[in-house]
Amino acid sequence: MGADNEYLSSDSDVEEGGDFEFSDDDLDVPDDVDETLYDDECGDFERSDDDSDGSVDDPREKVFTVLTEEDIGKRQEEDITQVFAGLSIGRASATILLRHYNWEVNKALDSWFADEEKVRKDVGLLEEQVVPIQDTENVIDCRTCFDKFPRDGMRATACGHLFCKLCWTKYVSIKIDDGPGCLTMRCPEPSCAAAVGQDMVNELVSDKHKEKYSRYLLRSYVEDQKKLKWCPGPGCEYAVSLVAGSSSYDVICSSDHSFCWNCLDDAHRPVDCGTVGKWALMNTNESENITWIFANSKSCPKCKVPIQKNEGCMHMTCSCKFEFCWLCLGDWSTHAEGTGGSFACNIYEKAKAEGAYDEEEKTKQEAKDFLDRYAFFYERFVENQKSRLKAIESLKKMLSEDLAKLIDRYALSEMELGVITDAWRQIIECRRVLKWTYAYGYYLPDSEHAKQNLFGHLQGEAESGLERLHQCAEQELQIYLKEDDSDDLHQLSTSLYGFKVFHTKLLGLTKVTGNYFGNLVRALENGLSDVNSQEW
Image (tube, rainbow, N blue to C red; front, side, top):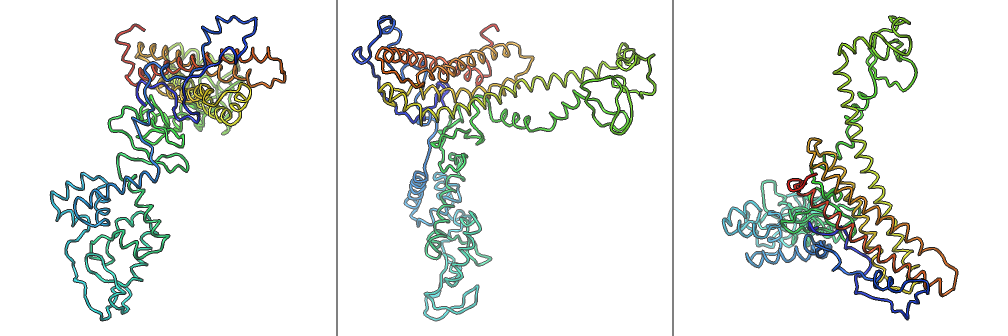
């Protein structure tokens, strides 16, 4: 996505369309409604791209391209054709050459013209036969099974090493069954480096193995290139090509799966891949458990097992049967009424006054502060992820059920109600962004006071705008989805007017929320550099 892009997914199931309006003949305004307010404030139902300040076109058209397997196959065939036509070599040889150079056409051509002999040797495209093929009708011994076969029952690559068709078929089939390594298959002769191309494969093996080999070849076209990657979505078979020099790695596949093209994790703009990796490690690291234990427990002086005290007196009895004082950790047998009884410890208070526990308490307090800070950001990260998943379900319900109700009730088209689905897509995207801002905030140093203040201000604006939008799209919409058995024209007209007010409000909130999040994302991606020009 471009930096100025409003946070609205354009992969909408609702077709974009022009403006439309209700005339007064279509919508009777009730007598108790101010028609001036109706005309001026509500306006016609609109869904115009011109309303978005600083918006850009669909990011998938400029930043990345989603490719089907058919698209990939066409690109692959174009590259192969360019090479075999340019070098006057066979199609199978061109395929082997490109595969060796990771499907980089220019690199393959440049290397070939620079030193053809070396390239042929490296790739296995022999120009001269190692063993001259016998042009005879006499029977020939197979070099693998040692049976005798007529000349037309033997096959060889460019090297000239003859093997019977049956042995060739078994050899190639086994290589294909072993996996993608079959794409670098060589002559069965142990000392021979001659490559085995797709022409040999198609001649020798079954349709099943041909298809398998072709799929390995197709997948290698994506997996071996730097500019193409498969979508990591479950069961997705699309690939994504990213435009060189793109500032953002977040992409949306045609399967609606959003991910980071760089690390293939879930889309995580505005934080970078390094922050995502640290955050994921933090959330699974056992060190947090150790820190919690240290901050909230003490170790038995005898067996060192950690013990948490949540109530009761200072007299502790460990599972190892050792009895000690919770405060000073001394043997309980040395404690009595003179040392403070069961709920106090004079020994501890005296040592504390002398500073004996200062360092330990400071360390424990730091551990508690660390846990409190982590819990603050992590809980909000999780809350927004849950809210995002709920919003996705709400959008699905809207597309499958609620739109039909509104269309039937108000005689509108799906295109005319697109502002509602747009709002939900905005909510889903903003929830995704918001959750990652909490990961960003966790790693923002406390010493950066100005940046902390700017971050809190921008995040607060965005979050408040999102909550207003979410409430409008979720709760206020329910008013117009409620069943109304009344046939009274006055009530229907009032409802239509109310829906038009709601429609205008939702459109405005969607735009404002997108602007808030656009400002937030740009600021975070720029390292909150605006603190240099403002006081926070």
